[in-house]
Length: 315
Image (cartoon, rainbow, N blue to C red; front, side):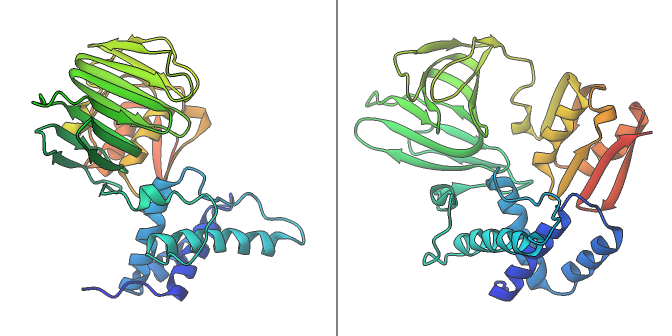
């Protein structure tokens, strides 16, 4: 078994993350980071933890421009905060880290970047876990509960002889299955639900009386206070479970953001081309080929500062 990265290596990885996200791309610095990354398996393992954190915490500290006398102190605080997260993920429970989502870290079932997984529950319910997903399964005599902390799942419910309701709970509320196939995605500030078969009942956490019955072919986004209006569910919305990303007349900026879920590192789209339109079906297990083909169909060029730092620019 490979030796896990030590404290010094984890701190170095956190420092590289802060420096590479300070808003000022520097080719020499990037080459130096690549040399560090390739110098040791421990370096690669430490950086893999940073990549996992990038997916797990939307508020993971990124550096703004560090100018003035307090720049070094600001950078050091950011490094220490990321280091604290890395140690917490590694099992150092003695470290108190502000805003770390321990429940997600310790979830029974997890997927990481570029990973998807199928899971069959004790009652026969089938789950598909998309990239960057964390959840717990809690079945008892009264209910079948799926606690989704982050990421996205596709649920195919099974009949339960005890007639226990199957409920997906997120930070924003609950989704009760009514003999159905449906998807749930935990976003940064809301939850998105799409129904493929039958129906579900959606309730915001703080306003449970605002129940909405969502039928097959519908989708809704809600937070803990309110529900948006139901909208038609686009075809191919759950294509990720088959390894595909299906889009129809999407903004390129939105497409690149979504594609970024399936590859490590930074993937950005220049403002000048964000409003270009893109349609098609793309393999999310081969994002390099997807990016390579963009310039063949759109007036863009794909700029690789490194393998893990890619920008879509005007041609």
